[in-house]
Length: 261
Ligand SMILES: Nc1ncnc2c1ncn2[C@@H]1O[C@H](COP(=O)(O)OP(=O)(O)OP(=O)(O)O)[C@@H](O)[C@H]1O
Image (tube, rainbow, N blue to C red; front, top):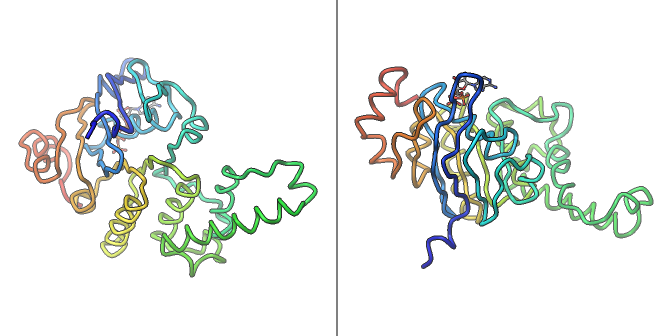
């Protein structure tokens, strides 16, 4: 098997400087197609900054990002989205007064073919496509265990459901790489377990996943591999069992916060 052919994301010497602070320093890492990779590290380690660069919302100061063999360094988020990278955010980005179904449908529009003209005329092609988008949005809601909430307003849903809805919206863009920013934040253990099962199903669907997460139970049970940042520098990388027992990793976590949450 050719390892390079399997590489979906390749980050080389990525650096981001804010004024006098180097938030991400010379990070080199790869993600193979089909993997679930966890990006961990104490508060302020540079995880979100790295994610922002990967998702296209923050240009790197130096270094490069290749996605699926194409150089994407500095490409804006809509271009990353078109290339197949979708992300969720730490802070919820839902439309609170739209139903779960309409939240997902708003994201599926990016994949439509009928143009504006067809939508204004409400042509047969447009109506067919509308029906297809609705079917697809319902399928994604069902995939995320939210089909029973299709007609519920987003702000009437529980916190765990809202987080799953955000993932549903990201999936609606049909990504090949999904970036999840602290998907388990604020979840209780039952919701966390549900999330783990959902991430496994996302991988089985053929989507590669990179997640930033503080909940070590979630990270250890769902990730194939972990990358650890501290002060913007990659300090460890490998399977969860190995990384979570690494003396340096334990030291940076124990120095600032508990490893498990
Ligand atoms: N826009 C910005 N301007 C200046 N400094 C920033 C900016 N964004 C992040 N930083 C700084 O960069 C460093 C890394 O922050 P970042 O948010 O990437 O860390 P993190 O690992 O995601 O932390 P957390 O786990 O708390 O979310 C921090 O010192 C932070 O204060």
